[in-house]
Each structure stands twice: as structure tokens, then as C-alpha cells.
Amino acid sequence: MKSYITTPIYYVNGAPHIGHAYTSIVADIMKRNRTALGMEMMLSTGVDEHGQKNQEAARDLGMQIEPYLDMRCDEFRKVFDLLDVDYDYFVRTSREGHKKAVAHMEQTIFDKGLIVKHAYTGIYCKGCEEFKKESDLTEDGQCPLHPTMKVEQTDETNYFLKMEPFRQKLLDHIEANPDFVHPAAFRNELKQMLSEPLEDLCISRPKERVTLGVDLPFDPDFVTYVWFDALANYLTNIGWPEDGYQDWWAACEHLIGKDILKPHGVYWPIMLMAAGLPLPKRLNVHSHWTGAGGVKMSKSIGNVVDPHEVVEMMGVDALRWYLARHMRADSDSQISVELIRQTYNSELGNKIGNLLSRVAKFSNKNFDGKVPVPGPLTEEDETLRRTVMQAVSGLAGEVAMPDIPARVHVLVTAAEAMNEYIDHQAPWSLFKTEETRERCATVLYVTLDCQRVLFEALAQIIPTSAAKALAMLNAPEVAVPWTPQLDKLAGGTQLGDILALFPRVNAPEAA
Ligand SMILES: [Zn+2]
Image (cartoon, rainbow, N blue to C red; front, side, top):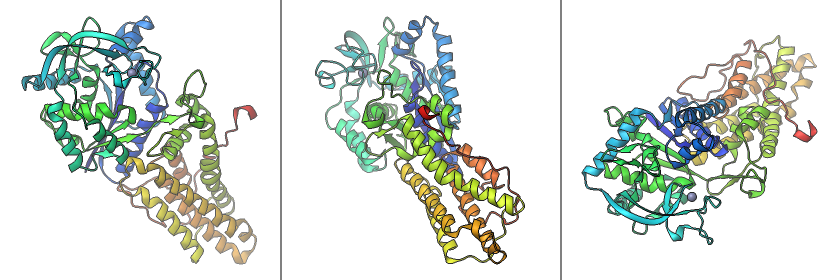
């Protein structure tokens, strides 16, 4: 079975930030989950290289456009590599094949008489790269998303895609496919957007204002509106319009932040309908990250979380863990370097990593560097094993984006149960007398085998650390499709080198 997951393509006019990191990491987690289940995967991420903002960002740095785009593109690629995002396709909208396909889509829609040319007077936000209505603006007449940018009064002739003829059809599609938009709060928001007649969508920009983009195939004085061009990547990545894209397209799920629901929920489906193409399978929408205390992140407040800084300080899995664990489905979630550090120390360090190194080190020292051979199991052993199997079962099936935090949380609960079990069984005491030494071996075995099962599940969330842990247990091979199973760790197996998986990170002041 195929699954095609897309992240938005990111504007390269600034450096990659936590929002980019989040969507891409979640996409990667979904990919690893489905890969583990045996599905054939395609994950695309990448950059949007067109539009006025990019053009101006290059100019501001005094750079030619091509070297500027190459530089930014490299930055983004490096961040995704740093974050262990295992993408299959990296999108660059400057690719010739993409540009040709965009022009083909426009020509197809134009030939159906659905694109019209007319003058338009209105307010334009450069940040959004779109026209605004008075009702979209704040009380002092600015774009709510770009309050410092100043909207501009614009009067120009452009090409427009007719939207209203498709509004009811799109509403019908949403009704008939309750899974089309996830979670429900955003489905309702989208229905709200579609509850009133839609204005035509401006799909061009005159070249005297913007040159960086795809030429309109039917009028060389214009380039394509950057959103039209960018959205088309989801199809051009899989080879559209050439044959062979259809199976991937039918399995396509977009991941987006709530700020871009309108382009993905209104513009894109209508573009597809206008071109006579089917809609993607699903739109997964997430909320945003704010600083601690719910304060918007900004450079002036100094609460911006820089992915590089976090990775340098605590490793990539500290960041992946926090992001996977703490996004709430229906409202914004808080993040700060300090919150990440606390979660890293208390959950990954104290609850998950320390237990593995304690038990593995003790086995290493007292059982000849080997996984102890267990004797008969007690009811307490079986209870722990059931708890762990129950906890990992959440990742042994397909996980939808809004369910990730809960599926990860339950793994922490399983780790807590393991810690309680070890404290209660106290293998260190059991080892001291000959009569209880077999029981000691059993307790260590049960714990190490449960750890193996836990880290097989964690491989979907924190792949680098999970691989290290499984190597310590000398159980690196995880079968695909993955079905969690007990007792796969053989007693007598030689243990690997025991490392601290999540070394404690102190607060910068205390360091
Ligand atoms: Zn704006």
C-alpha cells in the first residue's frame, strides 16, 4: 500500500525556524510509522523559491537571485538532515520540470474558460503575497499576520481563476468525506470559509512588480501567483502530468499549519477541480507553537527557539521528542529551550535512558556481558509485559497526526511502570544470595526485553537514540512489517557497549 505525505514548501526568505522543523518532523514520524507497518512511502518537503519576498530578500543582501536561492536551499536541506527528516524528495520550485507542469496546469484551466483577465483595485499584503479585503485587516488597517509590513493600495490588471462555480462542489466533497480535513475543528473552519460566495482568485502578478516566478503560458507579461505555483508542487513532485503519478496522488496527505488552511483548503482543491483532477486524500492541520506562557515568539523578546541551538545543546532527539509529545490538537502549544531541557532530562533521561543503562550495566558486570537467561515468570513480570505491549500497540497501527502526542505519552507511562517494577524487584539485592540469583536474572531479562520492545516503538519518534539503544541490546534488526513481540531478545546474547543515551543537560546558568 502506498502513502504520500507532503509538508508545505517553505519560503526561503528567512532561515528555517521551529514551525518548519515541526511540520517536517511530524511528517517524518508519520513516514517512519507507516514504513514500519510495511507501507510504500513517499515524503516530500522543500522550498518555495519564487515570489516578491524572495526577490526582495536577495536584493536586500545584495545578491544575485540564483546564488541566493542556492544558499537558502542548502540551509533548509541541512536543517532537515540535522533533524533526521528522512524525505524522499526535496522540492525546488525553480526546477524546469516543475515550471513546465505549472504552466501546463494554467493552460488547461485557461482553455476551459475558467481564467479571466480584469483590473483590480485593492489592498495588498506583501507578507501574504495576496490581496486583502477591508474586513481581513486589523483596526489600524494592517494585515494581522504581518502588522509591521504595511499593506499597499494596489491598482493593476491581472488574471483571475473563477472560484464561485466550485464552492458548492467543494462543500459537498467535505460533507461526503468527513476525513478530508483533520482534526474536526479545522474542518469546521474550512466550511465557514466556504459559507459565503468566493471572489475570483488572482493568479498572476505583472512582471513590472514581480519577475521571480513561472511565466503565464498565455501572457508573457505576467508571472504566476506564487501560491498557485507552490501548491502545484504536490503534483509535480510525483511526475504529473506524465502517467504514473495516479497511485501516489490517490494516497496523498498534506500536512499544514493552520495559517495556511485557506490556500490548501480552498484555493488548491478548486485549482484541482478546475483542472479536472481529483482531490488529495487528506489535509492534516496543526496549530502553532508559542513561547512559554503563551507569548508569541519574537527576536525582541528573546524567546525564539532555534532548532540548531537545541540540537547542539541536547541532541536532535530532545527536540523531536518535545515536538511529538507536546502539540495539542486544538490549540497552540508552548515551547522554550528550558521546557525542552526539562522534558529531555525528566522523560528521556530519568525515565527511559537511565533505566536502560542501569540494567544493562548491571547485567554486563554480573552476567558476563550477556543478557541474563530467565527462569519462570511471575504474575508481576507478566503484568509489566502486558503494560508495555499495550503501550506500544498505539504505534503498531497507522497513526493520524492529531493522535501522535497521546501515542507518545503512553510510552512514558510504560517506562514509569518499568522503573517501578525494577525498584520493587530490586535485582541488586536479589543478586547477593545464591538462592535468588535466578530470580535476579529473570527480572533483568524481563526489563531488557521490555526495553527492546519500547525502543522498537521509539524508533518511529527518536530514531537515532532508538538505534543506539537497540545496538546496546544487540538487537538492531527490527522486522518490517513490525509487530511488537515479547521474548525476541535471547537470553545469553552478548550486550553491546553501554553508553549514556541521554546525558543530563544542566540549565545554562548552572553549567
Ligand atoms: Zn499578510
